[in-house]
Image 1: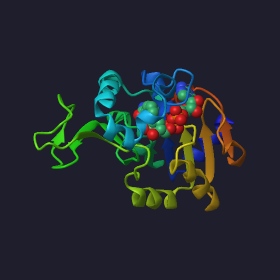
Image 2 (image 1 turned 60 degrees about the horizontal axis):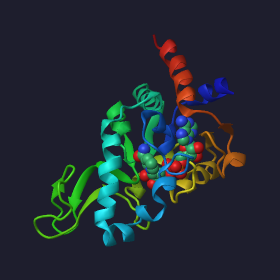
Image 3 (image 1 turned 60 degrees about the vertical axis):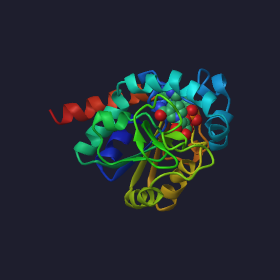
Image 4 (image 1 turned 30 degrees about the vertical axis):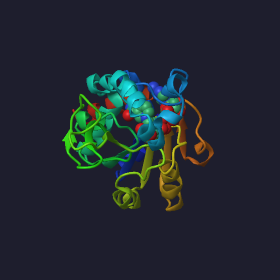
Length: 234
Ligand code: CNA
């Protein structure tokens, strides 16, 4: 099956859709796995409502969890996508991740649907911050990370559909496909005659709908595919 997938990637016009599962091997926990963040903190923490009402508790969480993201290095999956783009096969990456690792790996056309945890800004005066010492800005406004909370609209949705309209293949990696609107993108591409490939450790709701499904560690997958492409272009 891997050979078939590689052949399809070589046809080009690939778009990748990634989620927290591609960064777990960089040491960043996902939401829904056994050792994921929901187990430790519950769902509510990630809603805008909670942030607005309990910024003190939210900041306690990010002081503990965000530094893991800042220190993390990209892994084989991020590297594979950056190289496929460089080689002209991949049109871009749509990520639900906020960890900045696609940028660190050198991907250029990255749509960060849920924002980026390395930037903060004041809700009132829009002053920009890197990690702030206090969560209240000098203007009195609340400083927030530049991420999309549950209940907020996602970023760059027009750019997303422009990219998906060009996609002949959607390569889905490391996402449970349970969070809207990313959970709709596989259907969008399939309905336009595109090929759907899903690589994820656990089942997703679109496995039956996909052309290829691999339930495996996504880093193992990326390592094998990257090896093929690097040998091909040596
Ligand atoms: P999720 O719902 O936690 O799903 C992750 C999926 O990845 C699960 O189905 C796992 O089985 C799978 N998985 C975990 N590790 C691996 C692995 N090594 N190989 C293969 N599969 C693996 O996360 P989604 O991304 O689907 O949900 C979207 C949320 C998660 C977005 O709002 C993100 O902002 C949020 N999130 C992002 C990060 C990050 O930026 N790295 C971390 C935690 C949560």
